[in-house]
Image (cartoon, rainbow, N blue to C red; front, side):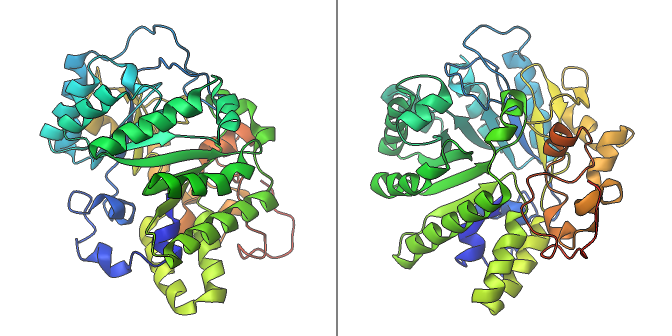
Length: 400
């Protein structure tokens, strides 16, 4: 994650993270990306079933019954281990997590064990009663996906009325006092809606938004041609920065993040070098703490059947299963060649990524995207939109 509001608008200083010793268990949630121990934030896909038909779905979910999901007992054993291991956050995802019957029980159990529990949902099933139930178990944050306004979102989500239902879910959460953040996956079909998303945020009083760059995974692997061009991406990131700055200039402290393209970090820094060199120095220090992409290190995914992956987009590689071994053992077992390489990717990267001067603050960006595009997980990330000059390359041919 790249905190646009944190970095560009100056809402976080390097001293803020240092004050807590940069330990995951001690850091407030908004500073977790600057931890030094990089204990993994765990995305748990609690089930594969979903009531929508999103064209970019990494889990390829349908509204059908799926077999072999972790039982309540197995899930609680997994949560016990995550808490003991020191995972700072458990993100309940899916499919659509609200469709899992024991979700409330499991969230409450995670919280009792000291885990910070959050939900990633499409929001369409959060009735007034469900919102109250989530509040009663102490849930403090819900991330709700909207990928455009009205018809744009509904086409992307594959169900007419999805936008209105999600908006009602947002309002239901806010009515009972649950913090809500929006999640928006950028692509050619919906980039034009970003200004309207900011308008909606202001109208509804939504305090947080995450803009996700497209990852070519699951059904999203068919959308490579729907991704923005490099120039279009630069324009969108500039737009997001401008809109965020406007909010802050008007005293509206909106938290804005971009996700899944760590070229955004150097891009923010390079813009600040022109506009505010002193702040740029602080941002560089924060980006060094952030370290860029952390798949297999600071981010993990556990599938509905207990399989452990480097992140939620890279399910073709499994390191083990929590039904047979504890997550903590799987995650620290570097006898697995890929796990060992992900703990330190630098020696294995190729092309522009290997030669990039921003490698220490980008981390080589997304290996899943490189593999989907080039068939080589160590190739350069095709979604990096920085120019050769910006990444410090001489004007020479560089193989991917």
